Structure formats: C-alpha cells, structure tokens
Length: 376
Image (cartoon, rainbow, N blue to C red; front, side, top):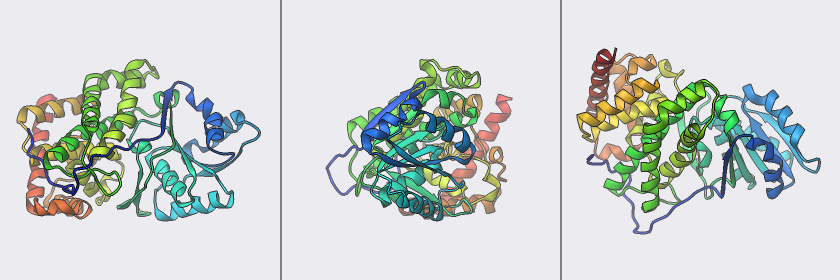
C-alpha cells in the first residue's frame, strides 16, 4: 500500500462528482452529429485537427441538416492562448451557439476553452482514445513552443461527448496505447489522493465520492486485463466489445476518475518531461505512464507491483525509461524534470525535495532498465 503524497488537502467534508451531461460511444456515431447539434442550437463552429480537416469537413457537411449553419476551423497544432483566441474570434463572428471540437486532446482543449469564453454549448468528438481530456471541465494550455504553461478550470463539463468507435479503431495504434498509459495512472493517482485526502478538481476542490474510487479501479482493471487484446484489434482495424471497453476506459472512466479524484505525481512528472526538447516526439499518455513508475518508487509500492507494471508496459509498448523517450538520464536532465514537476505541482514541495525527486526518477529508471535487459 502506498503512503500517499499530500498534493492539496481538502478543506471541506463535502463530496462532489462532475461529469459530461451525455456520453455516446459506438460505431458510426459521428453520423448523428447533426441531431446532437440541433438539440443544442442552430449555429455551430467546429474546430478540427489539421490532418483530419479536409476529410471530416466534407463528411460532416454531407450529413448536416440544411437548417444548421456550421463553420469549420482548422486547428493550428498547439493548445496555446493564441490558438484559443483565434478560434474564439472565429466562433464569435459566427455568433456560434454550439462549439464542437473534433480531434486529439489539444484540439478538444481549445474547443473547451472557446466554448466557455463565448458561453456556448459544447460537443466533444475525440478522433483517438489517446487521453482522458474529452470528458473533463479543464483545458491544459501550452506555450507556442509546446511547454506546459497553465490550466483553465471551467464550471461545467461538455454537454455531449461523442465517440465514434470506427474512427478510433482506424486511428494510429500508438495513440490508443498512449491513452492506456494515461488511464492506468488514474488508479494510482486516485489512491494517492484518497490516502492523503487531497481535493479533486470539482469547483474549488472537494472530497472524492465512493463512485470516483470505483471508477478508477474499474479503469485499471479493464486496461490491464484487456489492453493487449485491444491493441491487437486496433492494429487490425477490428472493433469488438474488447476494444470498446478499452476506449471507454481511456476516455470516460479515466476522465471521470482523474477529475473527481485529482492528479498526483505521475502527471507532475509528465509535466516535468515537457521542459526537455529531446522528448518532444512523445505523447502525453506515454509521459504519464513513465510518471507512474516514478510514483511507485516515491510512494513505496512493492517491487512486485512495479515489476508487474513494467512487464505490462513492455508488452503493450509504453516507455519504461528516459532513454525510451530519447532523453539521456543524466543529472542535468533529471534535475530539470524534477524542478518543472515541482513548479507545476507546487504543493508537493512541502513533502518532496528536488534532490529526493531526482533520486526517485533515477531509481525508477535504473530498475526499469534492468527489467528491460531481462525481458529481452
């Protein structure tokens, strides 16, 4: 059992739980987008990932009811304040009643921020099961260079989360695996915050409900029990209930879990990794997955549990060492990661020094390197 790290101790005995108003997941579900837009308004602006823009614009235009007015905006590639402001200006000029985000996590975060800036309804359509961003009431903002900057927290979650499993099964498999890395952290971070009674991300921060703990555990169980099989299905563009379950775990269960229980060390490490340019080519969930290994060392999990997790990572294709992300495990890089982690998750500095966090990173890294040698 981990001892838990007190990220932000809650100041109330009140429990709170937040979620999107509606969640739809199924094959071909994007074909119903016109009906869902019409339920919320008659004028919409949609931001779409650049690589999907031409294909999805044509598809959506072909299925929209004639009475709907919809404008299309191509995502520029980074969820920065500049990108948010550009989309806000576009949507505002259209008098959009509904904002739609279609794409990866950063595209969706731009849509979320824009909808709250102009007080519009929000539909979120993930193009991959790569993160738990779709269901949440927050946006993670980066500099234009891709370094984590800050977060926006909103009073409400998306009105609709619309997941088309056909789109997900045809997305790059690496994105699905990255989503598993992000999702698997949900359980360990939830347990950390439960043990330390740290506040969640609902409003000003409340205690966790029993439901949030159950969701986190279910999320972990689905990923570890079905993740390898789901990856094989995605590699072959097959979608049975096995892949559907992992999609739900990556998006819905992980989203509900992290927001209603809070993040911890794994996400702090992922944020710290963003400061190193050598790791730019690696995804959020991959970095979070590595952060889980560091959290295991920091919180004193058993060697048996750490071995089990690393074995799963090696089987599924998640990074287990800094070198897996093209980062040299020298003291300079490790100190940079530790300092950025503590800056972005400031309260941990009350319990963890930079030197000790560096030691935990190096310990996890060396242990995983030894495991990799044995696995080969």
